[in-house]
Length: 103
Image (cartoon, rainbow, N blue to C red):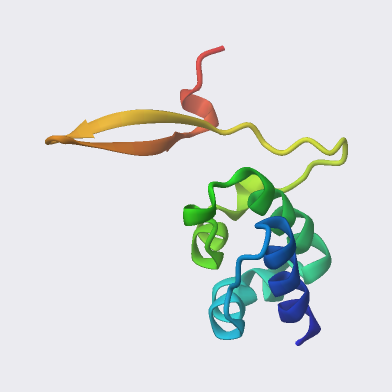
């Protein structure tokens, strides 16, 4: 499972010393690797780590949101826009789908 070790090293490198466990990373990302291959998942994983706040940079969140992290041929990831929604006294961030974005 070299891809797991590579992904764990990426996490430590990009987050400046953070650690993700072998089991958590493998379990969270394995379905993507089986479907798309590590050679396609890894660039998205590294991009995700570079632009995501560390507290949200989990393998599970990456797997749930994988399509938005895919690096396109020109090196630009898919645009993502967030909106804030108030739920009671709390705020929640939601991802707007491209069809909801204003032109």
